[in-house]
Image 1: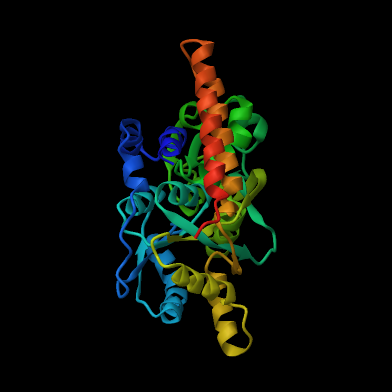
Image 2: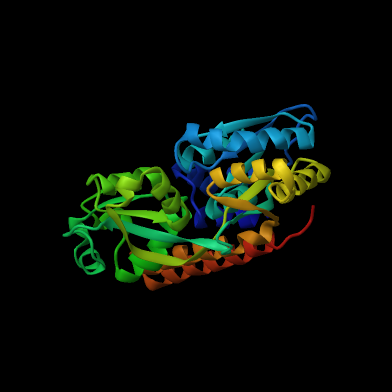
Length: 347
């Protein structure tokens, strides 16, 4: 496992300090050490992936988490932050016991921070995922794929953080790199923000193109109809698997099972209570509910991250071809080890 984490840390860096720790061999010791089991009466600290604003996200989750607290007979506190990076750092510091995370962050939480997947979200459209989008204004001149591909240096980009699957990883892998464009270096300017903030930036002519996704854009249309009316979808990705709920591995299996059972049953009942739960779910990114899941649900996210790392390695500048091939081999070895971790079904 330690050998895997050393390779995996170089494969999927989560920030300069973390990458340095991995390179020095410090983080594997922290990641693989057996953490003490949480006290039975300690609050379960729930981290929320920022989809809109921190306050907005917290309000949306509060009713469900209050019910979860009663179901597992433990207090549940909420950590709602403004960025992927802030949530990631909180997880690394051991300040999060359970979290709602998208593919890349869930992947890191499971492989580096001793968490396990217990559930995956389901949306009302019934699709097994959502799509990454590129948004532009409807009005020219910055409103066509031909112009974007031909002269990216004239465009202002609004994108997600590097941990964001639809805000960075997927558009980089499936659109920009195949068209010989590196997001971080080819544009006139760049801002990094939430999907909502990035869509507003384009609508208000503060940026020319923004990464987004189909689920967030549907939500954006409801909350900002005037601004959404100025926007168009310029490109969409292949399907991206939905987000997961992860729980600390140190919790007793019985507690993780109670959490999973609660989530799977939530919003499935009949009568007034079921109706009220479905209203809460709809406010949570238009969810229909949750399905039971395990770490193997992260295999598609791992594949995406591996493909992006391989693409970057192939196109990077190297001293010689031997150095490039050595890097590619390390990535392949790390990916193979990662797959073994994700397919591990031990409690």
